[in-house]
Image 1 (cartoon, rainbow, N blue to C red):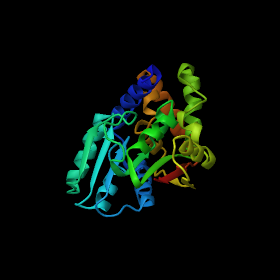
Image 2: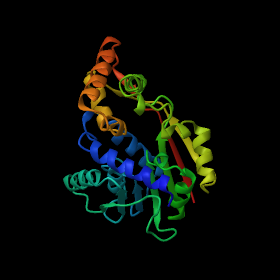
Image 3: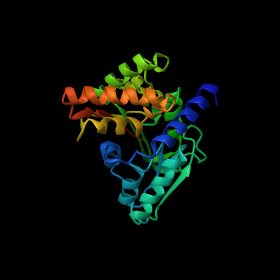
Image 4: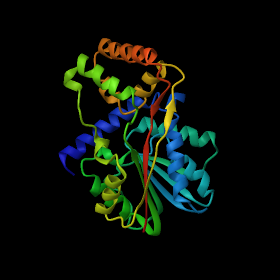
Length: 272
């Protein structure tokens, strides 16, 4: 494993452990909506075995467990233990006994070839530098006849507020500003299709959905920021710096009457 990959994994775990305290707040309902849409595209039969990597609090793992039923099984794996704790609590609340949440590294799965009927990765593939290698590893543990689902962001994620966030960061903490985001590598259907092909997945079915997340108030934007991957940038600032960015963003959203942000998504499914 390269040092770059290890650093990326450590950063992702730190960010999402911190974001866990707001991950399931109402303004972030898009996590559950997109997770469920991913699982629906798999058309899972009852009794299926499913692995969900970068599972978070269970946005796709929990609906998968509901669909496969008591004769099926779901494993949700993530590096962020706080996320897993929330997933376990939600599973108990729904009386789902066929799902297990465990700490796991999606880049080095401890499972034999062809072990699962379906493997799911929602908003996780872009966290590693070598996405093609990750897709190949996930594909390895899919059974013949089974499916792999990869879901990622499309164009315009969190806009118009994401641009405002980045511009505010550039003014307050230019050292934290970056014109590049990891998901920028795969924001079109051809890019996602090529990723699947390069990972060894033939004839993937790739589709885009253009959707939005409503904002009930300008303050909802900051809840989304601290309950998502943007938390990693926010947490390395001084409290006063973060407060300045929050206030600037909320003021802009109020003045411009922003009532939603983009949550455009790309779904890819491959069948072995």
